[in-house]
Structure formats: structure tokens, C-alpha cells
Length: 93
Image 1 (tube, rainbow, N blue to C red):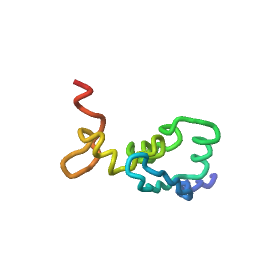
Image 2: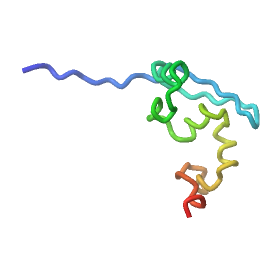
Image 3: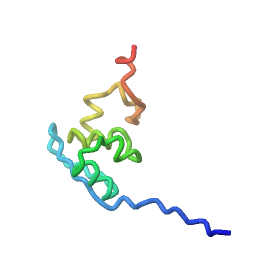
Image 4: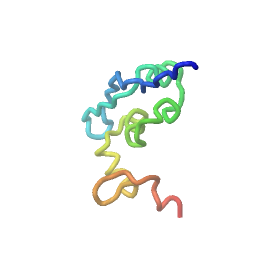
């Protein structure tokens, strides 16, 4: 019998710093360095490179808009407690 290889998830070892284009605050998002290279060196889509990030975290990397400003811009995507709940329901109707 062969030994089963233990799968260890790759560590998020690289910090992407995004300056918000609206408020100028900096958001830091931890990603895997290999995934960062795929995104920025090979221009792969963020959703393919960072499937483990939340949609707002990916949006911060893509557009530079911080999480707080995203909540203001896309208020319908958040519940009353400020938790992301998904795509704007108004746009789907």
C-alpha cells in the first residue's frame, strides 16, 4: 500500500496593499504568492486566481475600492449588520 500524501493548504504568504480610490485608506489582503503572480504577471481573472477570497476582498484587489467604501457603494449587497450577502437583488429583479 502506498502512503497517502497529506495535503497542506498553501499559506497566504503575500500581502496585497490596495489604496482606496475613494477615501485613500489602504486595505491589506493576504493571498498566496503563486496566485498573485498568476493575477498580475499573467493577467488571469481574479476570481480564478483567488477563489478563497470573499467577493469584497477580490473587488478591493481589482478596483482598489476598500471594504468600507464598497459597503457604501453597494449597500444592497450587505445585510443590516454589514455582512456581504451577495449580488444586488435589485439588479436581479
